Image 1 (spheres, rainbow, N blue to C red):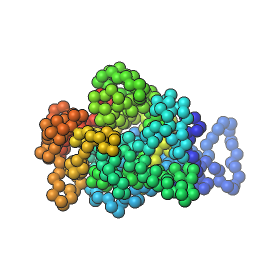
Image 2: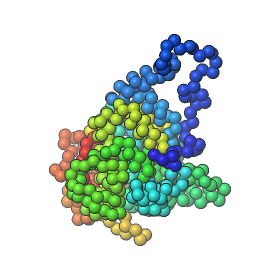
Image 3: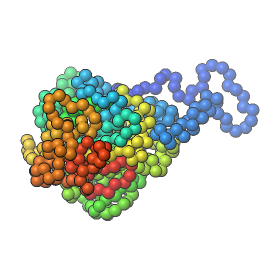
Image 4: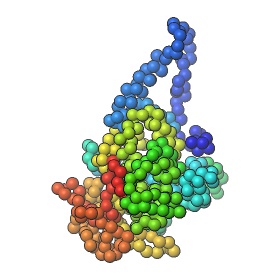
Length: 454
């Protein structure tokens, strides 16, 4: 990746290396004489290499080892945005972790500088740097139960019309970040804050509003989050390319640059970004784009497992370099602990669900998705084992109002022209799932394979 895209090492919030860390020799003492020609390793470096090689074996089962952890710990971008929410968070299920993945549709770097015009247009195929703003076009809550049980990920359609945290009224959920960022920057600029610091503090306000809005909307606590922008998607795809995907039908879209035949295929980084961004020309528009995003993540995790990327130190370091450059995580997230659960994510023991909408409407001159917040809360709480509020709100399930097949207001019903129902009907066999497949927006996408999507 060209030098302009490297992360600013002086960025506030980054974790500096401890003074003296690295490959330096001891400050005092004679250098030992070499007894033979050729290169030899100092004892300390040889020990570190031995640990790294041993860790490479551990990566096969745990997803990451000692070396990988310290690569990340040496400069990952962190945020304290979750600290403001923890006091008001709903009580979670013991041992479970809720991770929010945030995809930011921004054509700017971490310091607020425009990405080069040619790169945005030719590689990202994303138009001008003025387009997109700071919308969170991808919001996925990943629920990871304790003890290795099945992971469930909930995609929130970006145009869901909800109450934005902080008394900001109703807007599309994707706009929470940009609205809060603009408000904060106006106040900070009046105080004389400018440049990269203004961008960083504005983004923190955007993250806080997004996290608080999602937490309230779903009724479950958010324990950790990770934020990645358009460039991050591109860089991740570049490390693991070609990315395997499968399409049910051929597509051609001049807006995203998507031009693919039907069937299984391998995409480079530029094509992969077009694949996840396309919405024009798809039967359900944005909702189908949500399924594309799910399929992309599933395909990437599948490839990480099948091709042994976790054991390839070169590719692994490339992936972690992307994380340090393009990704922001919360400051309490222990990457090593999380990575131990990677086999569940890559081994097929996880699936994506898209949260339901009630229909479409126009609000404040914009097309939005209408939602039933009470239904969404009860559905997510039931699927995650979250205790329901003592207000008489029923848990979602096969018989929950609006959740059954053919309901005029539920997915697939007359009140939701964009809705689809999963093939085969109710998948709650033997009590494995407390909700029918018809409670969600379209079929589930299983992680760990290469699913075929529209």
